[in-house]
Length: 224
Image (cartoon, rainbow, N blue to C red; front, side, top):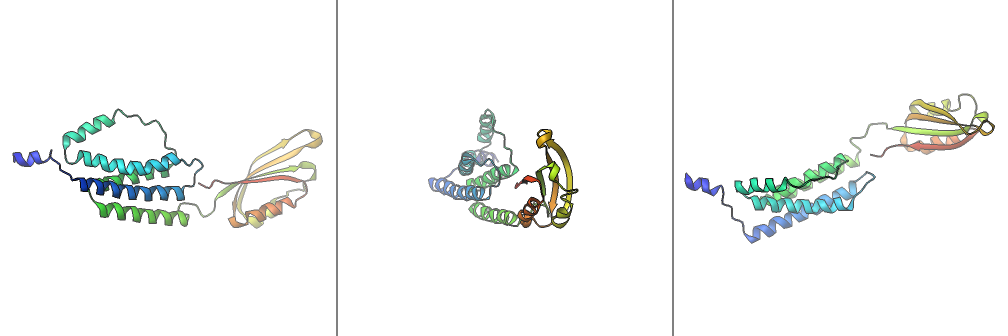
């Protein structure tokens, strides 16, 4: 009974195991970083974060090897790590997912579960690529912001109604304001619209430009 209890605090690992664990973590970490690099759709891509994914996978594997099955080391490491303060805010939900991805694969590598580490990386990457490729999370029709600037005296009555009926599923006027002085007064229209076919957004803009008095058109949408 005493020997069984002592075995909890004893953990042996060979140099070959250490090298193998770190190499598997490295390969999987590189795969995770490459996946992040080529699927990132935000506006604030960080090279440092991409490199950190590789290092995080390797470091996690090393931490697990340091702890082994030694409870004293585990508690000591938790105490040591608690003094670190992480002040960088993670704004993108996908970044958090990649952090947990790297941590999990590092854990598997650190305990010599190579099959789980390698195939886990492969399967999760394939599923994520499929989701990105087919825009699984995007709604069927996105909402766009359409801004139109025109000379008020040249605009016909209800100038955009017919064009909206052709191109839009839904439209809503959210703002209307005048710009400039009376002698050269301009009108700025702001609409929320949903297109019937997003591939024909250029056609929508082209049709609106044909209306007399149109000066400028802006169409905004959020890719993320």
